[in-house]
View 1: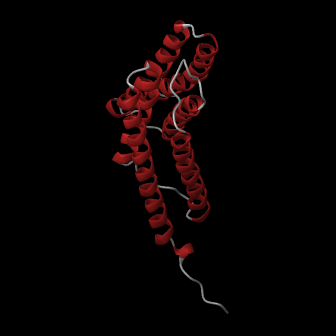
View 2: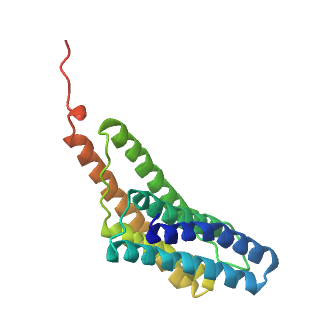
View 3: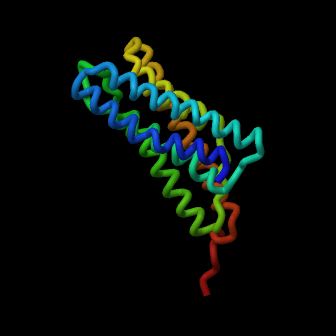
Length: 193
């Protein structure tokens, strides 16, 4: 268990606290709960960069980390986006349902593709793309912006940017997956006997 993996697990442990604090805030309107939710989400988001830095700087790359890190991202972001897609007004602005649909849809398509490639090829090679990293940053910004209750116009800008980059990154992952499948002999046509 590397230090980077421990930081990733800490991120995952913060998610239920974040969700509970948001729910208490929208029920009571007590600003202390919103501050606690903001703190949990911000620490988890910052730890996303910290665990990657530790893994690269101290050569702590591990197979476990390659699964835990994106899983922690998905759990944190999907929790935040889905939670804020419900109508919590007047306490919090509502994120559009299509943003949650875009994010969850992309992740389900990627997950299905990973399963097909793993079954067919035997080993999946996932290359991170810049668009995926930008999508993650924009999704985090969207959730933080909504929790901070800043200008609603900018919230729409972050939301639109997050959806666009999420969709584009999904396209690149599907493209990479199709290339992996196409290069494998199992995808070649067989002659009938």
